[in-house]
Image 1 (cartoon, rainbow, N blue to C red):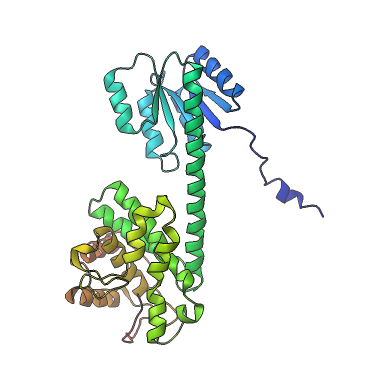
Image 2: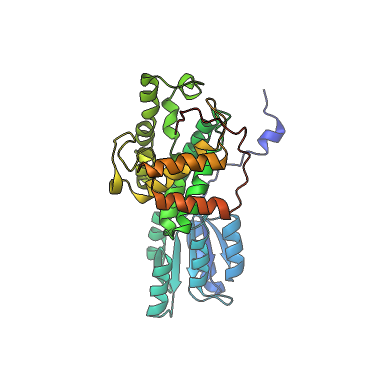
Length: 349
């Protein structure tokens, strides 16, 4: 039985290359030498004489490695490097700066911008090939980790979608939390941790049966214990990946409360990192304003009343609640809050 031709055309042929390398240099002889050395070693090489053309190609089809001249006709190599690092899709791309007459300041700027390595011109084969091999190999390992993270992200979205009411919950929590973090002036690396932690915060619900997750009435004590295990399960699921280690506190502690009444460990106050508290507040707000199996969504006003009560009890961070209110007010979030809830005396966060 033959596969449909439309399917066959979508399957790319296997890549026989040891890796794809972009050589960016305005010197024809340098590019020619690099091409010969690299193609003999099994690499696919693309050449660029100007930075702008190379940058367009890098954005469109990122290679495994960029060999970048420090001095180009239309821009400095440092300018190109900065734009590579600013783009989330290429920020981890290995970039080797080739220098002939660069100054110490040029090298220091490249290091600050995030250059991977330097090669002195003229480049010798015995110096070039081992570095290219190791950097391309590291890029392939990074790609595998990125692919694994994408698989886990799809799993997280699938878990959200188990309940049609909560589909998109993790994405909304991530957006609220990142907006709060930006408003508070958090560093870009911390905001990225918050985003990833929020996206994966409920992944442990994979262990919670639908009969509990979608139950219409209040939970029994045993069912509550089952629900309370999802941060532990999520942390265990992600702990084997080094790239996830920075976000494990968010996944594990997002249900902790400042007064120690949360779970799974009942930690309190300053023992709860700020990145965790930001995601916690965003999570509470989205849960309250989303229709779910056991109650309709609250209006924003009702949700703020419930949250303010938790602040008064010392459970939620008042400064973060204030920041979230400002985010919601100033970003013009428009969500249908569903049927206004007659607050039933119970809700699950």
